[in-house]
Image 1: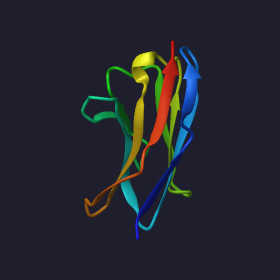
Image 2 (image 1 turned 45 degrees about the vertical axis):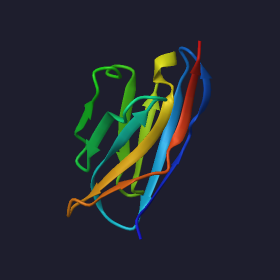
Image 3 (image 1 turned 135 degrees about the vertical axis):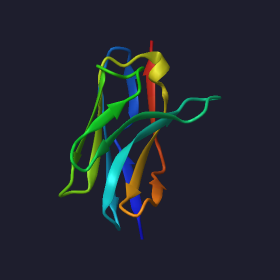
Amino acid sequence: QVQLVESGGGLVQAGGSLRLSCAASGSIFSLMGWYRQAPGKQRELVGMITSEGGAIYADSVKGRFTISRDNAKNTVYLQVNSLKPEDTAVYYCYARTTVLNSYWGQGTQVTVSS
């Protein structure tokens, strides 16, 4: 059974930082990453990272957010720096297996106060 368990969200002032973690279990994941959904908006891609370490980011977070992963621990991280109020959202972990099955975490709230 595949499980994705996120942690690390919270309330932070603008300009602050957080580190989100997502521990995955139950399969081997070729692709892992993060999406976010703000109130009243569609879920959007934040960034993705392959098992080889190649990463892509949404333009809105480039230079501020960094994705990394520990393959031995099946864990993906999202370091979020220079946070802005518009980064406020529920952040969801995403993982795709080598046979292209996709899974989602339960989400972790990030709230940035101005």
